[in-house]
Length: 296
Image (tube, rainbow, N blue to C red; front, side, top):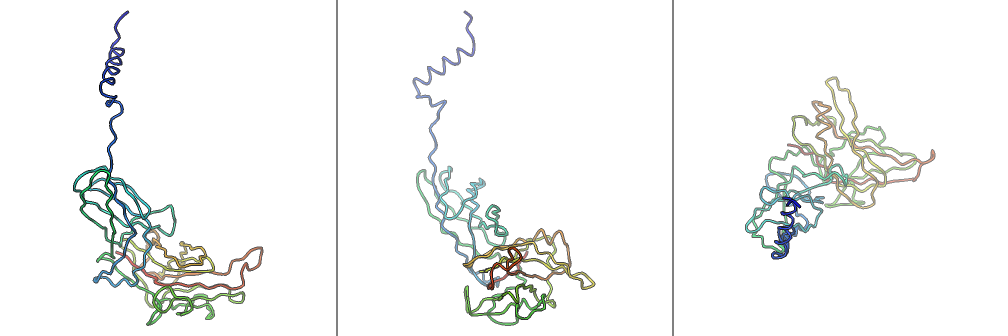
């Protein structure tokens, strides 16, 4: 019988495995080191008047040097195969538009960097801090504490459903925004001051931050103002009713890019839910706080 080259190679591998515990086929697995990342702290940047330091950083984008390690929900235990002194880089991740499946780096928070000596099997703990970037442009902050109200246009014409400052339910500070609804006044629509429009186009990132607690679903949007004063409403960002305080980051970048208006107002609207032709609830409260319009 002819000697077959493949048969010879197979016999050689079997012989080698008998002396080396088959390390050629099943090499020894590398033991990783681990980075335990605790939840973020948002700190004050003295160069940016960004108001409240409340945040909703839910994830972290992690890098070791030039290698992307992945996206992790916080707190996170992250395996790292590199050894020795490494530069760890963390970017704060948020749920874009409040959607749990759309995790994005929040562009206005500074990245966190730290050099760590990594050893296999060892766990190092990081307590990341961040702050608003110094080039953040703050168009307005409505915290309902003092001064003239930012949301001063009563678009529905009903003074009983207007947004007012209230001490009834406070997120932080001494006041929050309140809108009261009932079956005689079931709907509201309020916008920012028509005399203070916001120029947003220019290619940079644009976000609206909102803290909220609400008995009814809400819609936020941008109002385009053309050169004749005509208003076009774009309500594209929704919130479901929620009985505890929560925070959302609305990404307005794409909407501004598509609409390309020179100036905008910000507006919010909502109403009592209707089921089978009747109001599902007889009254509702909408609480808002720390509404921020920011961009680059």
